[in-house]
Amino acid sequence: MKTHTIHWKSLINGKIGAGTFLFEAEEAQRLAEELNRDYPAIHHEAVPSVPPPAESATPADANG
Image 1 (cartoon, rainbow, N blue to C red):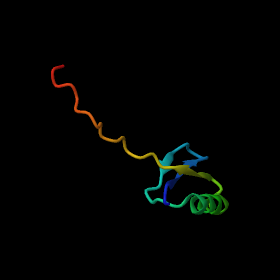
Image 2 (spheres, helix red, strand yellow):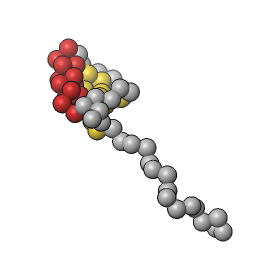
Image 3 (tube, rainbow, N blue to C red):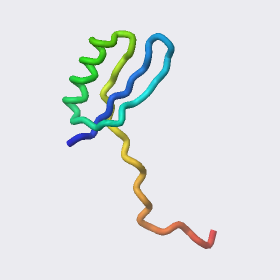
């Protein structure tokens, strides 16, 4: 199942970011390792993506 993204951080200026594509865990790890070899000034890491919070099953208290 595709559950991981690639996060990165520049070792030169400290900028950070995250990819938008989802990968299977092993594929993401391999890609991060390959990117670290090809771009040594940027650290890449395979990270489990965080799903958006689920909607509450119970309605909010409208009476406040």
